[in-house]
Image (cartoon, one colour):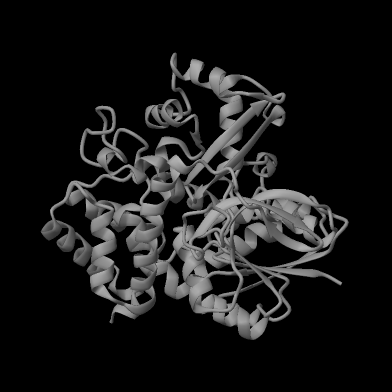
Length: 431
């Protein structure tokens, strides 16, 4: 019998390619992949690419596709969300509108005014997916990669009975980045980390059983290549590494988000170009369109393995279905794991995955000095989640203001209202 995985938001081309590759490389288990995307043209492109991948790898994998997830959800074992409501054009507004008011974001999908704005669009759509899962495949595991991950997971758990889990490759990428920087095999590094998605603190770091922070800091004092000066300062101050480094971490430090205040540079402009990220996504999709139109096979180098959010998904599924216990980092409710944080706030921390299910670990040694960083944004996220669930404009304005301290209250309110107006078509709760 085939296991069924439904990918909602299949237009996320890099993720879809990586996930399909992972499935094709596991020939001992038979899979059916169901692709879902509300954009018919995008879905047609991705379906053609996936069929070529399956054919060229001679894989025993079946495939279906639909613009209506309700057609394919029945019988699903796993439902994966990579949706981005409004796509890259809406994402641009989350960054470009705050720029007009002097707030510069390199990403704008997690926190800051852009992240709060994105949550307002994402949460209603994710709730609709969760409600369909409750009705059509209630035993399925719901996993989301969609940002802003923390707020999305909190909202789904508050408004439905679906036990959603958020996955991100930030911690895995973080330890590999440290290994490259220090020129050591990453397999010999051990670590403990916990935090909010994209602000995850690696507070233990060991190499062959010895504390590795002294050597790490010594090298950071000579160069910050790959790590970034903001993160390097944090490591020196707290003996703790922020695994997502400056590109994401800078958005949790509002003093860096004014023009020229990121070490003399401007975030999203000459530091971590936002336009570069958007242009890359547009070019990548155009490449996929050309592959789909062609009658030729996909080139050999298309099958080269790229790092990405998909990396651990099949390992996690294998750990559960084949009872091969393993520890992976997941976004799940705190529930007392970190003392001093609300129970319902979703945190990223290690969990044991096995045939018995998911057992999140308690972080009894989490450094108390790191709590203020998390507590502030845990509170802002709760306000934003309530705004998204209820359509309360006042709460939305307040969450935006708390993430935009360089602005006056008046300008923060104007920016918040402009963001609502720009995304009106995707904000049913505010109408």
